[in-house]
Image 1 (tube, one colour):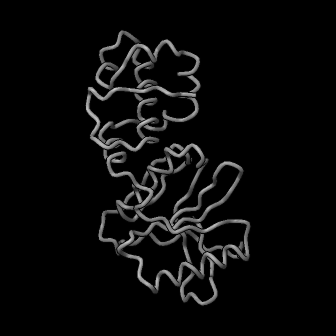
Image 2: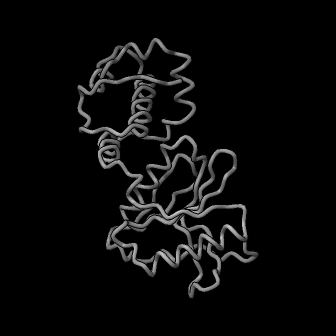
Image 3: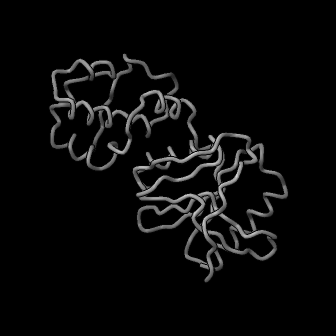
Length: 209
């Protein structure tokens, strides 16, 4: 990687004309910034990707030959196997020929000078229903990681308590166990592309293996 990395990118108004804010990820020890709702959706997707171990937004910048400004990736992501991926989140409608050339130059530079990879991520990885349903559940998704899966595997009898979302609240189990079940549901809904909105009667197909 280039020897000199600049401080964090200035947190300025996004050209995507969206609100900006901070996202508390279960994969990070501090809030991660986002400049548009488009970026925030991608952060949610990474939170529910079991291969994504951690990430940081707008964490580094570096000069690229032929690119006038220092480049700051939207996210630096660490995947299983310690694979590092620099991500640029960009809607397809915003990908002009000029931007395409810029990102090709950045990708080539990263390939030639680091052991990392570079990727432009558009809405093709987003499942709109999936993201909408996840937000509707209002789950503290920090629970929906390895400790939840381990708990459910050790307490498989809990999986027979509920067959749909609405049954969780009325199940005769402790509040902590309800939290774990909700987190398990959120984890699965984050992994599966649903074609219809989630309701209280949506069947739960457990597959914590």
